[in-house]
Image (cartoon, rainbow, N blue to C red; front, side, top):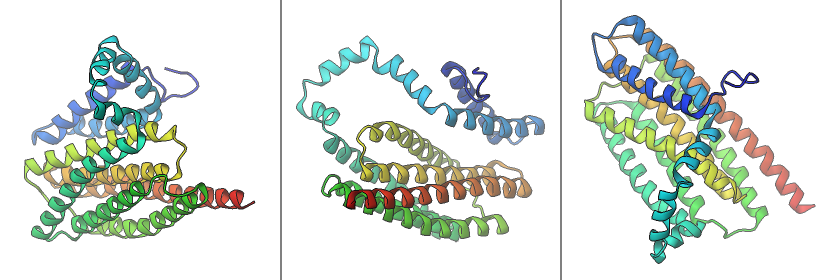
Amino acid sequence: MNRNNMFHFKPITILFFVISTIILLIYSLGYKDALEPIKYFSYLYSTFSLIVFLFNVKRIYLYLKSCIVDSNIFKSIKKILYNNILIRKYFEDINFKTLINLCFSSIINLSFIFIKFTDGLLNRSIWFVSLSLYYFLLTIVRIILLNNIRKFNKEKEYMIYRNVGYFIMILNVALVIMIIQMVNDNVAVVYEEYIIYLTAFYTFYLIISAIINVFIYKKYNSPILSSVKVINLLTASVSILMLQTTMIATFGDNELEFMRLMNSVTGGVISVITLSISIYMIIKGQKKIKTSKD
């Protein structure tokens, strides 16, 4: 561990934290007879692991890249695949790659939104219907942004970047209202296990996709792609809240106070982060617009 930062660990240690956290949560949330001390320890441990993971995302990315992408086996496979024109274009043309990723992610996102929206209506859950609409708006904004890559000059792109900041700030107000309602009323719906697994899969997909895109989009210095990156991160963060609420309601033993506490903490953190990001985008966008005019 780095003495300068208590959250800096070796990549292999961080991977151990992640794997052990998954095992503990499966035990705590998957078994009704799980011991109470272990259950509460697993919640604290998972929080610590998440913090460690977030502090070391770049190090983990570089570690996995050196183990997988830079390996001789991967390079040999890549060389064979590059014989195909479309595959080579996917890896070398950012616009083509973004278009393919957009189509794939949009199909997954819109399918999940439809399922959750329908399920929310059937269970009469305003919370899940509202969250589905929240996801839908973020997805539409992402599609619009990606559809306009490199169609504008830098000044116009930073105007869009700033406006996305305003949009996120307004959307965060709606999110705060939903979170307050959820916490006050302990809003939750108990789902069948397949819905839980679907939600968990979708959440992990969003998290992994958002982290990968952080590193992919960073090197292109594009305000549009930066906006897409922010949208991806917000979608993933809200999905974590949804998964948490659903799992506690389904596997918890009427732990209403614990649910209220966890939803307050997680929802508050997400809201503060969202507000901070929106303010940063507005300020940065305005400065860049002013600089380009001067």
